[in-house]
Length: 371
Image 1 (tube, rainbow, N blue to C red):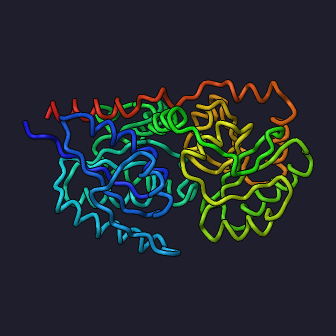
Image 2 (tube, one colour):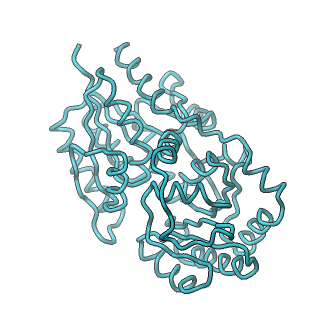
Image 3 (cartoon, one colour):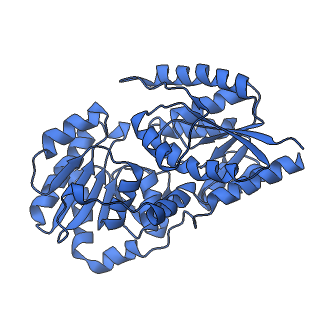
């Protein structure tokens, strides 16, 4: 029997982190012939992850342009992945999550009549503008894909509600936990260069979502200033995203403030170590809602909606929005009340056991053995 040719396509750092365990698992199985395509929707941040996980793309489309908009990005992914599909002729394409790369690559494979598997399928907020454009990206990707690898039961239920036949849905856990466990075990980092005070509790902040540009980012930064002012026993580390809509605001409001450390975007391994050392995490990121609870760290989500309600239900994360008063009050409760802190820190993480990639590869093998 000829090997099944699998083409994985990703373009951003979060996609690469979550697809790396799948790529590595596929490469270990002689049933598959594996090719990797990077669109490089994000360039530098993506390359850091590829180096960490020792993945070399077979196709590097290098599409990133300064201040690129969604129209040009989508068109570039569509056009350039067509050439890859023509050359590679895969039996199945794998995409991940909710990026423009994922959506456009799935559409490209659909045009070529090649089946697509969606890793991290079924996430929903049911509000098409929150997060933007991710909600519609993942809805569109799910509609285009043949096979759906859902991280949680909620995601499975969402897919069924959307009319996806249950026989094409596979509950696997989330591959980000595979990547995280591997990284903290094998790549513990020295963070002394951050010059943090070990006597202080560290709050890690990330904020970069498009829907938070403008006043919401300003509100988040104002809340940080207030928290640090009121609590002399805390320090904040904020790796600032490269997008100018984020950087200008962050440095204008937080730059030069005592016990607030603004850093360049961090490589994945150092950031995983930073999360491991943190007391509390405040973020508008999707992936951190999954990762931090696996390390026993409470997460305050700086958004009004989340496509990961499982974590809210389990109590590992809390939606607080972007109003300064709400952020401050929620953070202060966790700083002051050990019982409330432990309720979040010791809740069971719903995102899996670190073996999601194994389940995805097993499912793919079963699919093609049946065919």
